[in-house]
Image (cartoon, rainbow, N blue to C red; front, side, top):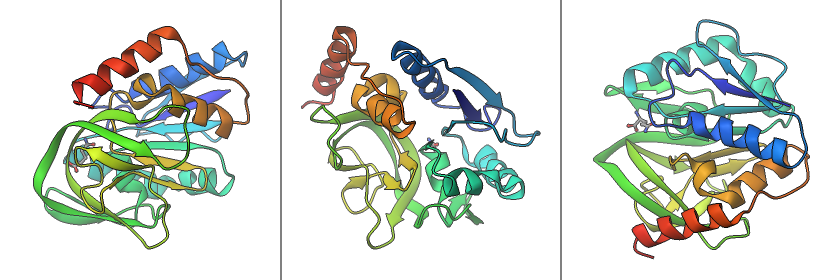
Length: 229
Ligand code: GLN
C-alpha cells in the first residue's frame, strides 16, 4: 500500500509526518507491504495512494497549501472513492469550507462541513479526549497548538469529546469524522500516541490486525498521566 504524505514542504511543522511513518510501519506489522510516498506541493498529488496523510502548518504555508490543493483537486476524488484521509490541525481546517490565515478568510476544499474562525486565544498544550467511536482505549491524547476555532455543521460527528485541553475550541469536542476522512487537532504524532487510532486506520484501509504492544501501552499511560488523568 502507498501512504501519501501530502505537502511535507508546507504542512509538516508539528511532526505529523510521523503519522505516515507509523501507518506504514503498522501495516507492515499486520502483514501488508507499505511505503510512504512524499507529495511535494509543486507537483500533482499522486493518484495511486491508498491513504492520504496531511499535517499542521503555520498560517502562510497553510494558505498556500489550500490554494494548491484546490487547484490540484484530487483530494476530492480520494474522498469520493472512500480512501482514508487523515488530516491534522491546519489540514483539518483546509478540508473544511473556510478558515482564517494571517487574519484573512480563505476558502477550504469543502470536503468537511466545518468552518474555522479566529479564536480569542491560541490553544496550546496537552489534550485528552474520549473517542466517540470505540477505539479499544479509554482516551485519545495529543498536543495542540492553534489559534483557529472549528465549528462542525449540525450532524457532523466529532472524533472525541474533550476532557482536558481545547480541541476544536468550541462545543467541547475535537476533530471530525466524515466518510473516509478523519480529522483532529491532535499532534503527537497522533498515531504514535494512540494505538487505537492506528487500528482504526488499518480497518479503514480494509486490512486486518492490531498494533497494540506493551511499549505503546506504556507510552499511552505515560501521556494520560502527563495530562493529569
Ligand atoms: N495555522 C493554524 C492555526 O493556528 C494551524 C496550526 C497548526 O497546524 N498547528 O490555527
